[in-house]
Figure 1 (cartoon, rainbow, N blue to C red):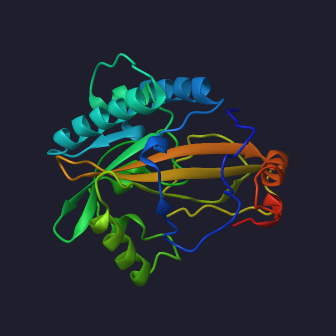
Figure 2 (figure 1 turned 120 degrees about the vertical axis):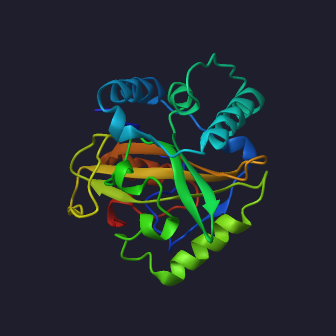
Length: 246
């Protein structure tokens, strides 16, 4: 099991979609105590499940390269990190940040998923989403109706360089595994009293040259009792994490 013991934001508090808020650019990529284990797990999955965790479409090469450049600039400027990188951009990113990296590019009226390194899927399959637009990607999500779809597309269209956004989700699982692909035709059972809490810190960053949007996903998995402790330790949060399940 690869677990964190603390959640740095009130992820147990649910918000209506899309639930985004401004993000300080200096806080785009974050690190926590699970970093070494999560990076090892990424390396293992690239070696054993490559076709399930890495996908690109032709023409996305420039956006992939710019995404790597943006992350390296951020790491140097805001974290004092200067990692050596080699190989294709998404694979290089898998070795230096915990986040999964998804690249969305505008094609016609919608943003399309054109490249991704997704080692920690929360019940979806990259192979079913690559090359598809935002609306089709979210087809199985009941709360993602046509109104939300329009709002999310406007959000992507309006995202500005240097003004990133972020959100989180709230999930409960019986299994703490990070790699949990699941087909859209096999929806996940939402267990009551599940022992593990999973939350994704999702950031949206506009790249200046290609105009692509980097959707980064930092995954936290905690034991239920640690969620309660996180809730108690954060200011302005009087709710028990265990009572706010979705």
